Length: 359
Image (tube, rainbow, N blue to C red):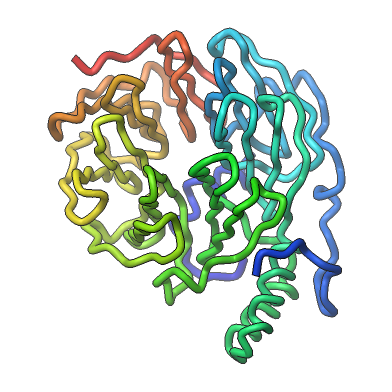
């Protein structure tokens, strides 16, 4: 990636560096060769249990975490212990989402998207950056737009170098993946086929897209330079929202009380009660990036700073309850275990904290 200034890449790309609906056809002339890590299985090693992890989620009662070099870790005891799952690529994985107890997806560097149908025990590749670029070129050629064709051809020539940063599935068939330089792909068939829907987005600068969440037919996307986009028709069209912040947003969450929260650089966090039309600033009390967040099962939410501070919020108001980090911990993901514990993904591996209370 060649953009000269990209501070927003800190959320997952930098963390990772540290540690037409048609199937893709043959790669077009001029395409870059495939990196070896796209065809090499992740190494199974005891060291993986301490590897940098970038995201964690629930698959039924199981916890599934993903991270550097294709690492996928599974826990069936609420995050107390972990085991490694086999993965067909060595590309760093930045995000993971499950549509139900069994079916889920992970995505990350080199445009990789993987699917699991057994709660993370095994995975198969559905898309990579070379295939994605070829699909974008096919779509551009179908429009006859010379500028779009030239841009897509450049993606083909640059190869599989653009990462996905987040995933969201409305159900087991309809899903989206977003990433660097305005990268957004969608599927209507559970990932059997993917297509670029970037032309639907009002994102003329091709800003990085870091987070997205859905509730019903409403989708919100958050990104670089305060970018906020919304769809109210399940992703068929998007409009730009007035942003309360000019720095990068790295994530979104939606609570049981219908509150949306966007969070990002320099301790910034905002909440919306109307799906993004208006935003209210949250006083996090921390100067560093808020890099992870999730909704609590019975309402409210939790945010984590990249130093490990825990910030608890309620649906009823903007106040946050802060618990300083027990140890400086570069947190990059959080999930709620079945027993209520906070399970954290970090550059130092997985951590588990006691169940939070927003009272």
